[in-house]
Image (cartoon, rainbow, N blue to C red):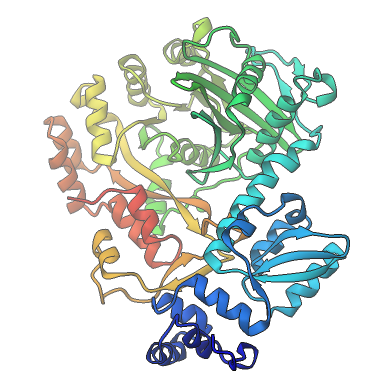
Length: 573
């Protein structure tokens, strides 16, 4: 910088040129582009690749008379100081508390000219802000790291008294107190950590908890809207205590560390009743724990809220109101199969019908429906339960999953003797569901006779409505998903990321469906033991919408993104 150059009386472009970080022609090019983007000149120059983010932060600080926050200062920020500023406020206003003294708080900001945010920080902390300038990418990394540290350390220090645990013994209601004051001094930190994991998982609507040991750390991840996210990384020394605590709650053998084990227990918290299924697997670094969370408090879905397109909804309603036959829903674990069938039961239940379910596990408790929980350890299997239900005068039967020939045989006989049967199988798509039933061992003439409808489904994440924004997809992106560039009517959307959605851009999920009503032509193909390709082609000729096409419809109406459809479906070859 020349001796007579004063950056505080200069434009940002002049400072960049003077620092040797940009050319005058580049700045002029950026100014032209800025007129179309309406973004700040710095953002425009960075997006065009004309300057580096770090060089802009330096110039911006020089212009305003502030220092630049470097990598070390941000990533080593004091979490106790950062905690003085609520995370939601920090992410929304792009600020991070770094350090403090008796009267001041050092704050890194992306936009030091945001006087409203500065005044708010002063009111929140009762300290005078001392500003550092930070680039957006580095600041985002620091926010993730520091507030992640706050979650795994500061909150662990708080006692969580609102959660109680019910023992894992089937039928037992003995409560296990998780309050730290009931634990030994040595065990209390582990008790607090386990409580915190449950609290965070329930708060974030998680469906699974993964405790994964690695060489130096334990990764604790929760599955939110079908995608795993890390919530804390305690040291590997904590693994033994975590696993032992969970084994005790699940009534498992704490001395056995070489073999897989399965167990269960329940978490009761205000307004929630969560059934937790535990699976423990030995790995090279220790025992990995996966816990499936089933919220049994209530079922608030219906067929409309699941995301059925109007035509599919009408078809589905017509089929589930038939007096007999079989409806089969397929998809991988966690694709919402049971939820769709529960919604169907909710639609058709009345005081005139006897509805019974056989499930493992019972995922939701439905009023007016008789639900049986399978417990194979005492001989209460799908087969034995179904044989008993024959004497219970059922009208409608839901079988949680057709796993073997015995269960399939009973389900088919039910449907052929005047009962309406709902069930699920694991298959990749709707045509594959039919061949899967044949593979299990059901005769083709029985499959063709009993099936009313076959449906495959997947869950895709909804774009967060709080940070939803239009964007221009690349040609490659459109080609990948099967859309022709230039022929997409209307804008496409994505989530920018905000505190509401944990910066993922998505919040909540909806289902997409591939549905085959069993028309006469399709039944004949099944009778003739046709292969999957013939069934697929006939279903397409009859108007079947594939999972990929169903996903694209949701992309075009702005509900989900191209990225989600590519993640959840395969190309129709």
